[in-house]
Amino acid sequence: QVRLVESGGGLVQAGESLKLSCAASGDILRINAMDWYRQAPGKQRELVADISSGGSTNYADSVKGRFTISRDNAKNWVYLQMNSLKPEDTAVYYCHAEVVRLSRRTYSYWGQGTQVTVSS
Image 1: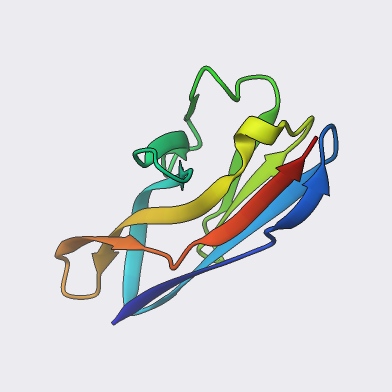
Image 2 (image 1 turned 90 degrees about the horizontal axis):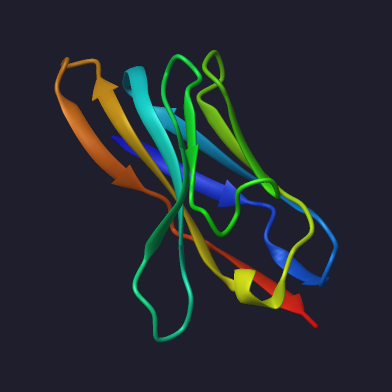
């Protein structure tokens, strides 16, 4: 079994920063892409940022220059540093990973989500 557990959400004011963390655990051989998604009330879940196992990154246009995704391959953690937060960043943030298990089969996993609320 594999679990993804997010932490670091909370309530902040506009302009402040938060850092989200996501820890993957279980029978993991390796992790390919790791991503952060978010879902605001009444909206579809959207990709915020992703990072390959080699460290290549992509960002949604709405967060470029403000958010930074990083990962620790040795610990199977992924992070999202969020700076200059805006009220429109308010959402539940989800960690996602493509995990190669010890069986050498690849599965997609999601965390339970962490709430980020930015007040104006």
